[in-house]
Length: 216
Image 1 (cartoon, rainbow, N blue to C red):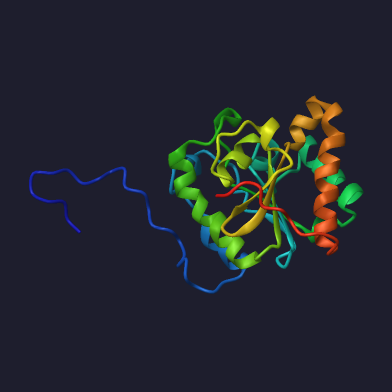
Image 2: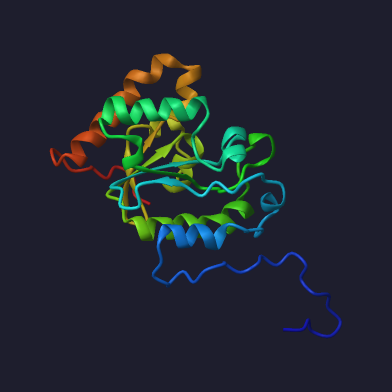
């Protein structure tokens, strides 16, 4: 639609979503739809879009903040040292192969210098996460690290107090825990994250139900 007389066209309008949010589709189809995304400025500077990886029928979904350098280079989430730590967390504690869970980030492109995502970038990218969740229908989400946990659980509670608590994101029980990168810097915290993951394991095995301690 043409701009009204006397006004300039809106050069900053966000491009539309490259898919219909109401459409039934697979994760592969969604990945193909978002491959060329430039809805925000991050799309112009990435090497690869980092969509997500794992079992399309996974019961367990891990969500981080945004890709880092290694992820941007390879197009796969959690492939650097933090990714190796995450793999050990999944396979040694929950006792399932990494390939059987699904792993993604709130943002699909790397922010410059690994800075925190900006609200406008999340507004452009979060519909992709919503659709991934709609397709996956996981039983449990694990929010990795301060930013992902605070955003998904709609709270400013410090991660030290938020860790180990369940809320809901899009109606799905969501557990906040520390980011694997933090565990590389603070190995003394591995024990309490192990406890978080053992709770996840018990839920997946039907031994207990997730308590909802944070409402969002």
